[in-house]
Image (tube, rainbow, N blue to C red; front, top):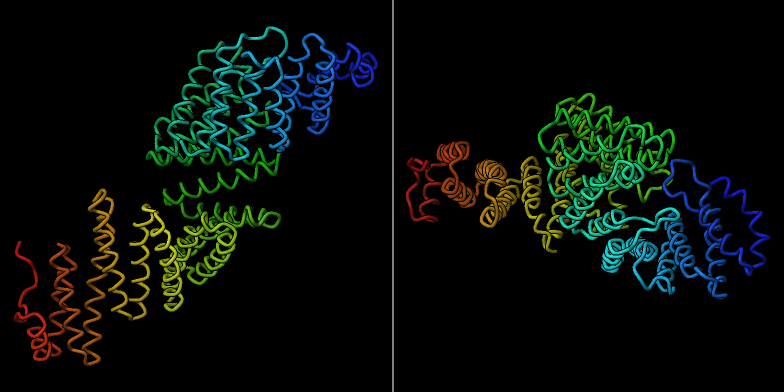
Length: 570
């Protein structure tokens, strides 16, 4: 390649001004050769210089077409497609799309060839980056079909491959949220690569790494953790350890793959394996930070978050706190220069650190850190409510719990009320997956009210939580909500018993009996021992304090005698 660059000053006089001589096509071919690294493991020329060479090659090719030079249409199609590739790398997606479409309109592009297939491939990537997923999928299918029907060129470096087109199609499907279809195409592409010769596989090692990294991410989304672990083993086998040091992009892909693999191992029950892989991903990201700090830190925060999760699951809390503190420091540093991008990550990291403080008995510190995270999350909601409102509701609920644990019951109720209101709104807008969270946050608010001695308010929260959970159990898997239902009913029995006592203290006998009546009805809906025992105790306390008044009110309100035994037979 260096030899070709050295020939450029020699070729320019031969090409003549504006490439009007026959040497113009030779100069254009040389410029294309210089502008495209073709995946070679070497440091490419600066992108701006390669863009300039590509633009010059396009101009020379157009001039050759106007002069009807033999082979000029093919050279122009190739020049436009390769220039589109460079524009994609520069993030100039509209221009890349225009260049790719132009490459498909020259006469040479009317029959399937590697050039037309590559043009469709570049068009796919440009459309996807412009969030035009539907059009990108059409272009991807055209690219796959063109590669499969094209006759391979013997001269010159290849322009893409069927595998590259399949990988692009799978990638676009993933971006469009069609993960299951995406994984199917990824697996087809993996089989195609596996069938190639060792030499061909070696030339496509970057594509293999990209494919496997994206495939394991899709399998993780689908919950196919066993398959994802197998892909991780495949990556280690097919991408030798020295490859990441030859290709910088593969270092980033390896880090991302290890993070997804660690999550999948942990989700599949192999917590020690998940921790070991997360530690490997952290080491990989630290090494990447040395060569590329910006890219390295962007994935290091993901690796540290994954490691902290597994340390928490393994009860290695001292190590978890150390990792979480480092995660907060990195997010703080990144948020200084890009608060919109890293502010939400910092908020989530602060929430995790607050959990560590609470676990270590540092209540005030836990509340202060959570409040800081909530404020950062509010700013994120101001920019993108749809994306961050759910996270704000979660953090407000955590803040309610942590304030309650420090006896700030007024603040706990305020945070719980706001978190519940946001969650209700999200559930009402069609988020069925949010409905279980409504019950959770009703219980959180109910506990805050109970601590504040608002027993009737607490009971109302627990009763509504019970109603929501029963509805979910009727329409879904009952076992998924049994624990939540039991917690709501236990808390409800305590709140109703306390409410009855409070009403009697204030001389409100009818209200006390109404609370006792609701408590007795609760015993008919559950077999929980603590609920039945709480009911017996509440009735006994009321009887001891005002047997005549409560007995008369009970008979008047229910038409039945005062119950002598509230347990159900059997």
